[in-house]
Picture 1 (cartoon, one colour):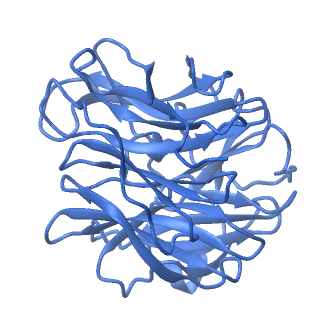
Picture 2: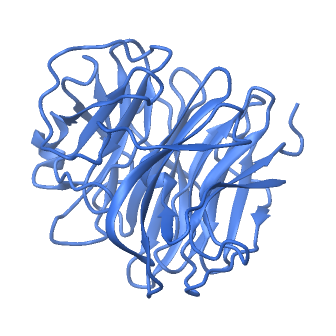
Amino acid sequence: MHHIVAYALSGCFAGWPANNGLWAWEGDEIVVGCSVGDFQAQPGHSVTGHIRSVLLRSRDGGESWTAEEPQDYLNDPHPPAALAEESDWTGDGFALRVVGTGYHGTDEPRGGFYLSEDRGHTWRGPYRLDGPTGCAPLDGLEMTPRTDYLVGGARECLLFGSARDPETWGSDRVFCARTADAGRTFQFVSWMVPPSDAYRAVMPSTVRCSPNVMVSAVRRRDMSTDQGWIDAYGSTDNGGSWSYLSRVGETGGWNGNPPALVRLRDRRLCCVYGDRTRRQMVARFSRYEGRSWDAPVILRDDFHSVDGEPDLGYPRIFQRADGCLVAVYYWATRDHPQQHIAATLWFPAGSS
């Protein structure tokens, strides 16, 4: 395994790729988002001051990275507007960035999104997430989506998000929505994890296995014990309904960690997540579309932060054309004891 420091700036805290997004295109060009602020050692997150959104770009499959701060991307926030024009969501340079409330860098209680058609160099938005918050299942709830979507055509896309009771932190539950008009409106489709479920469910990471079969890994937490884990859910009717598949792995205390899921070229699934109790980055593979998982693979366990807090993880993942996996997350080591963005590159065992 090859570990790379993708972004580290003295005096700065950089984190949360999972809260931002990862987009990849042919030619092994990758863009991943992160949140950056001033570093100040303290309990919880050692970040103070204004938190800005930074994009990291690699044109060589994750071997090297450069930082960008597009002027029209998140850092100049204004109220979301209605999306008037339609664009081709299957275009070569298309990227969608979904925002909500309740996490670093965005505060849109009704949700919103940005669009790029040139591989993240320029962006349009924010646009209103019109539709879901006006329907009965989500009426009165606060939107807490991160970026998780599957494009199905020039104007069609499934979006996987979460919503919560604005008066109850941790009441998030996961849903599926659909647009058939390139983002002008979205319709609620189904609950992946319904409000009747006993535990927090947020930050899904979803892949398509066949025209109608999808698998999603979901971040879970028992609010009474502060223990977190990852569950897998599946749909066999293109998102119309969902069922529980398996428990993927443990993410520990300190609010746990979200998953990053990818479908490999050999049809296996790979799920990467951080375990804050064990201070590890972990990968697990499934040969059976999320119904069971092989033994955990420890990607790294050399975490060492100047503040002593196990503030780590929040990965995104991508598979290059040559089969190499690229996991991007935030980390700290003895050489770089302030939280920074790191990447692990490796060829998974058993790949063809």
